Image 1 (cartoon, rainbow, N blue to C red):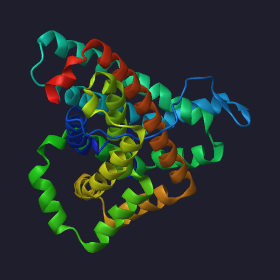
Image 2 (cartoon, one colour):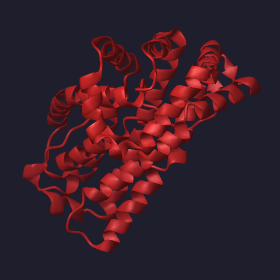
Image 3 (cartoon, helix red, strand yellow):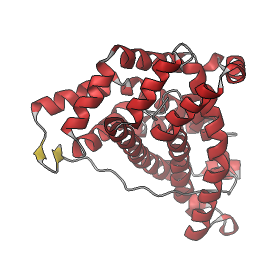
Image 4 (cartoon, rainbow, N blue to C red):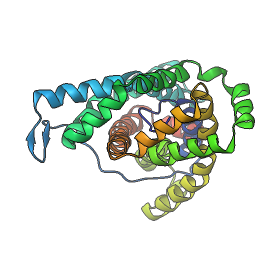
Length: 303
């Protein structure tokens, strides 16, 4: 996957990271990251309100990219990891945790926040070029491959190792360019660390004094955690994309890279990544605050 697009092909890697993040939070070794919160407002760009054609074009672009399906996968992964991170708690508390996580990480709510960011930063020319790519036969095919990868992610373990060994250096280089230009690995890491950050800050008041950390310590820990995790995720992302795009020829994969690296591709990928992170930050902050009030005992269970 060249972009995060709801953590799409990276859903499997997101699950691994989220589990790791939960351990960091409840072991008293938290991390933090910073992002500007998005707020829902009217659809306005620098040049004024969106036209009907622009609204319709944006709706079609987000639909053709498979964003809703990808966000549903992300939301489901978040719910699973919040519950997996819990140990000796009652069934009532587990139900509370699931309710809070599923409400705040609702796929439709995250989709709406992402759409607002696109409306605010809409570029009609780049929108048209990006839409032309997703309407193309190859664009449609690649979206289909990415959605298929989500459906079959659980059976990838053995296939992934084989795919990595068989890939040519040229093929690997193309996929590395795809990851670098689309920001998939970096955004996957940041999505998790945003959740970890929000949980950590919300639970600080109920931690013993000795387990609390200052903002400076949090900043240092997030930097080290990000650096330590990013290279690992890049490797996992590489083999996952090799497998997801295995039916593409080198020429087709090269065409995809060219789109991602184009002005329209960079506008779309960069905006999608930043919009996703902003939406996740809002959801994570709300989730953390509600959990700290409703089930503060989970900290003690994992410390």
